[in-house]
Amino acid sequence: MNNSTVNPHFKKALWLALLCNAIWINASEVFRYFVFVMPMMRESLAGVADVAPMSLPVFLIWGVWDTILVCVVTGFIWIALDYFGNKQKIALLAGSGVWLAIFGILWLGLFNMNLATIEILIIALPLSWLEMIVAALIVYHWRSKYGLH
Image (cartoon, rainbow, N blue to C red):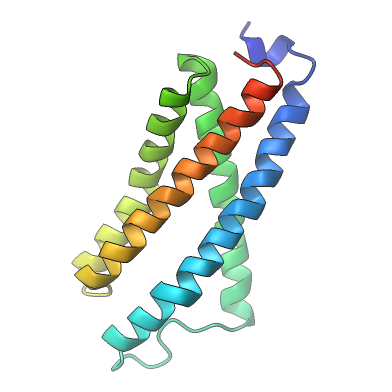
C-alpha cells in the first residue's frame, strides 16, 4: 500500500492540487491563446474563414479541453510522484513528459498539416512547457506540504 492511500491528508492534498492547477492552467491557457496564438494563427491563416474564433461553442469546448488537461496533468504527475518518489526532479520530468505527450503532439500535428507556423511553435511550445512545469510543481508542493512521500 503506497503512502497516498494511508495518509489522512491524501484527499485534501489532491483536491488542493487540482484546484490550484485548474486556476493556473486556465489562466495560462487564456493568456497564451489571446496574447499569442489567436493573433498569430489569424495572421498566418488569413485565407481560412473564421480561423481561431472565439464564440460560445468554442468557449465551451475550450472548457472541456482545460478540464481534461487539468485532470490528466494533475493525475499523471501525482501517480508519477507516488510511484517514483515525491521528488522535485520527478515532478519536473513528469511535467515535461505530459507536455511532450499533449502539446508536443498537438503542435507537431498542426505544423505537419500547415496549420501552424514555426513562429507559432517557437512561442507556444515553451509557454506550454512552462505551464506544465508550474503545474507539476504545484502537485509536488501540495504532496510535500501534507507529507505524501
